[in-house]
Image 1 (cartoon, one colour):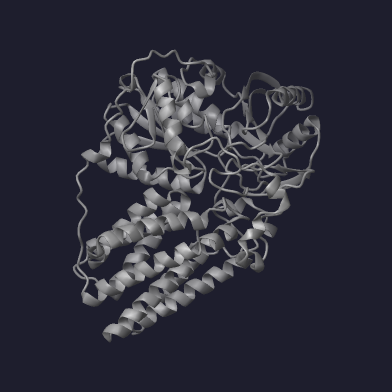
Image 2 (image 1 turned 30 degrees about the vertical axis):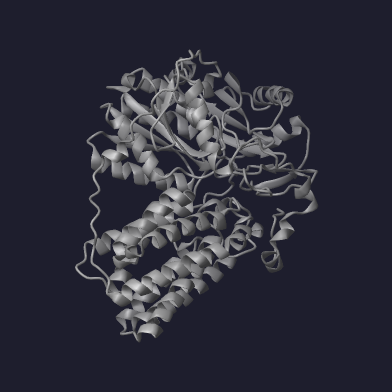
Length: 619
């Protein structure tokens, strides 16, 4: 699969991404400011739809008739923006109680998810079901928010992960099957059950036994999309190529095939979906009753959708000998302006499922019906429940003069180093992710640098600095990498806050605690080709050197070298976690960008400490 970068030379000359093929693609967007696209779109939804409202300070859309959730199960879902009408478009009677939006193609931050959960919890529902679309960032951020919510309220919280991707042929992926457009049928069924007063256990049983095991989705695209503010797509197709089995963020599929007719394309997709040799296949047999959702990824014309609908129904009934009892076609779960579509098939193993699919809903994403609206002026937003929480953050022990000044120098160096490597990291990410690793880390580095310059005292207590980094990673960076850094530094901060002193040994224990949290929620292990392949050897080396009597600066230097070597080693690793695990090995032409970034940060931190140690005569 061709990507925008394929050699070391291209890392030096990022202009190479503007190839003739990319230049032909339109990057025009009908937007104002790139940073405001999500907020303006959500504001428009609230202004034009009286059935929903928004929580102050957060991108959380909720039902405006939340009082009707009392004593029933409340349902929350969400994810990155750019998939409209998902997820805010599914808020309403008979579907979601609340939806949380992230930045474009980025998981929403835990704080906003928590705001949605606490708002629902105030209504004293009979339980709250959090439906997670299976991507690492969403799984981690929603999981973190649920854990925090459990500690703040007695309401019962449960999560259910949708993973309906049938494109993957093997089962050895840590990240697992992706959540795709079949999720919209899951939301509809769960929402209908909640509206009818079904219990949380009844809903979970339905989803886990009668829906999820019998649901499959596969997608196909004629081309990529381009994110707002970008000039290059995440992947490039030749004029005679299509991408089979891709994800909804523009990440690569499982196979590149030649452009074919609608008939041949649908045949290929259904054959792949039902291939018994594939570990993720959906088994269909003669006489099965099914519900089908044909989803427009954003830029397929209505005329083409009609042709595709004809082929999907005809081939399922004539070739696969199943009975299509419900068929839905339209824009359900998009990928910006991607010229592609996906097919979701749900086996109707229970007669109740059809009733739940048919049940009334007021959400526009499913029914497409217009919302009558009176010109009643702008409604007040719902209060931010996060503001009601008291700040109980412990300050932790204070550093000595060297620790304070060295930490300030190290943080400044690390932020500047990451900012200078933005384009390099983006290019390294182009073959396996959203081509935004560098941009994401740069946002975090800029925010940290602003905070530190505003108050240099923040580095006088490591726990305060680490809490700041955790918060910035969660809110300014977002996405999977933001969640991982948030976990790492929050775990480290908690350990230091409980310590009576801060020194090199405490620092080692702190980052070991943070590393354990990253591995627990991210589900990745060393060797999976992630940032852990740099972090784990770095932390292990640091603790080992100190344990053997080595000086702190020497331990930091050796940990830095271990991180850099670990990052280099990812070049020859098979990806088993994150979005890179969905990409063919031949596409992974650079070391993992997340691991490489850890090496950059470690080197800058070491240089900062070394300079201050030399200036102040500290070993």
